[in-house]
Image 1 (cartoon, one colour):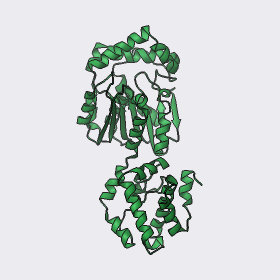
Image 2: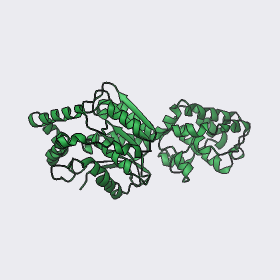
Image 3: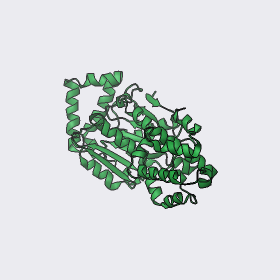
Image 4: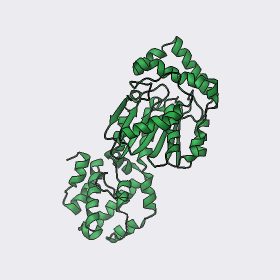
Length: 379
């Protein structure tokens, strides 16, 4: 039995899967999965690997390949059992290493993005020293009692399975850098400057070898657990990375004719999805899904974006200045429905701004889009 904490429906859309550290568990993520899931509109799953938390125990000693084994066997089995077809992996420490190996093996496109908190791809002296200090704290201090709160009867399995593997002399050659060149999806690394378990050399190795888009956030005065030492900064960085608002900027920059078409009062090319986006679930084409807005939080982030928010407001002001009050004549019948949906979404996201309400008044007699409100739960 594997312990899972699930928010939302993991079989619907992309699911955020949280992989804990070497002494962690599903519950030790606390409220972070729920908060990120609500902000991004995604279901979340945090799970305790075998031997951790409330999951089934495992025999000791763990093999020195325990992280690679989880990436090849345990994690894929969990995704299959929960019916997760698309996932973003969010891993901390050992969990980040497991995410790296799994993403390097993923040939089917199941994994869309990686968020790596304090990852390690090779062993450093600082890691060994800190893990040796943890052994002393476990044997002679209160670390065992603190961990028992989370792991119960698994506490010795959790600690010694991790600690003895890392302190085994044969583990000094452990290295998963070979996985990095196979990773072509976007990667975000978050690292504390004062991490006692790893240095920025880990971040540099990942940055230099992955083949996809790479972002990093180095947090000053932060240790091994950014989600605990700098929770707001860490959460906001993860949310921004998952929302990926730059996809809208890229699309708009390739189709800037939409401004002139609006000024002329006649849409003649294809840009509706990424200029007036809708809430997720209304459109089912690949373009509609790619440029859907997942939640009110994402809509607010869109409005706060220095480029996207300014362009959206400019477009609505242009509409308010047109002599023609017939949205079908300007956009066509289908895109006129999309405009109403988009205006409703942003009106709900920013009720203090009269702009979107004014456009609904002008073009739709003040009537909001019912399907959008139903998706938002604002009816």
